[in-house]
Length: 303
Image (cartoon, rainbow, N blue to C red; front, side, top):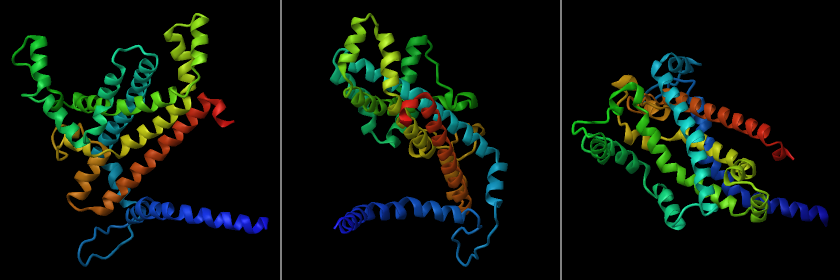
């Protein structure tokens, strides 16, 4: 009877998991495996084209292309802004809301989260126009610096081409991490915080000595989400900096836009598949590093 029951439970689990597993294989795992195989060929789905196995030639071409290294460098900047910008800001804002340090808490929370309901394409166009010659940001800056001819030159200089993208990333995604942290803070025992206050701990001490260690697991999960999102993001980057890979030395190019400009437009699908494999590999490496660092900083997580 026990064996029969276990078999019945196993069948039930298989039935429940099968649709999600099938969906995962068709939508995610399948295309990844297909792209991996395609990246070792020269097949671009052209009429009457014969599939030829060329080994690592596509990867060699990518690593020899200076534009790839520019895109990778910019992607590392995006990862840094996401992990060391969005997450700390989200944690601080969540703590301020949780501890009631700001007035009109509901309004403040809604305003910070508002960018999440706006299309990322719209956000990209919004920031591109905001810092444009006739944009609101330029008009405000002209009043502040008292110079009617002032213009933002971020998009025109290689050294500052990523600044508008970094600002847009902070504006749109910080609210998401704030809500995740706030939801977890509300599960905490407030008695611990009250006891710390009675013992003489100020808000600064409570934040760093109690709240940050308590949120270590959540910080790790958010870091993984931020890294994966930073490496696969395309729409906002393309809308904010819609170059064709020319000019500015490709200063605002990231790996997804690099893949689009140099693979899909000329229809080099095997080349694009190789780029996508590299992006996935980089994402996996960063996630493994995040997990390793998280375990070292929070030994209790392994128990």
